[in-house]
Amino acid sequence: MSARLAAAAAVALTVTSASSAALVYGGGTETGTRFNPGAGAISYMNCFTAVGADQTQLSLDSVSVGIRRLVASGALVDVGIKIYAAEMTFDGTNFGRGANYEIFSSGSLGGGAASVTQLVNTGALSGITLNLETLSNAGLGGWWIGVEFTGANAANTANGWRVVNAPTTGTSINGFGLFNNAGSGAFQSFFAFGTPPGSSPSRFMVDVNGTLVPAPGALALLGVAGLVGVRRRR
Image 1 (cartoon, rainbow, N blue to C red):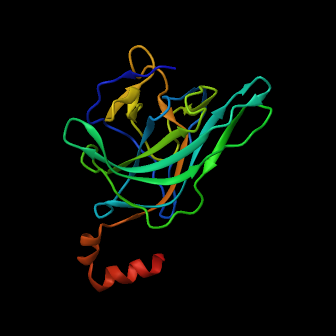
Image 2: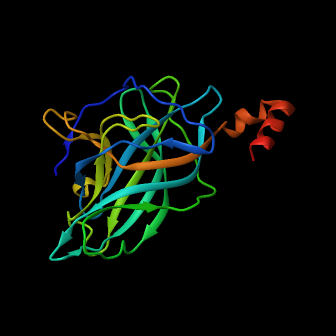
């Protein structure tokens, strides 16, 4: 499936709340489509969650993505995968990609004889804390989760990131970003499906578990009472 570039700026979003150390983004029902941008390209899903005034960072606990895999000639086409977490930037008009972290890599998703939406989980993560984008939508913090297909079958469209409807936890713009689309070497957003762009579901299947935390500078201003509260959350 091809992706059309959609113009996007700050978008008013509604969001369901999530507790600390829990699911901060995810859910949404599967559609009948998938997306593979080709070898060397990374697709990025925008993710937003509700934040308080001092919650400017997200500490990642785990991430899972849904990869739709179809049988060809009686067997699944094997493929490798990398999963990324990236900081989101916003300059008042355009969304961009900041610090980018590879959080999972596997050279093989394995075989099988039946088509499946395969959940790929990073397992427990540690040491990955993202600065959230909080300028575009008041009360929300945003970041990106990326997927890259790797190996000899990276561009085989029998494998693709599953497309879903709106999330049930958190919120997102109905579109996605791409890095190195068609060998561009650049990050671009937003792309969306349908005519006009965005008239079809344009979100990808991803669940993100994490803990919202203040930035280190904000934490220092909390004083002794604030530090006691932090200890209790550990």
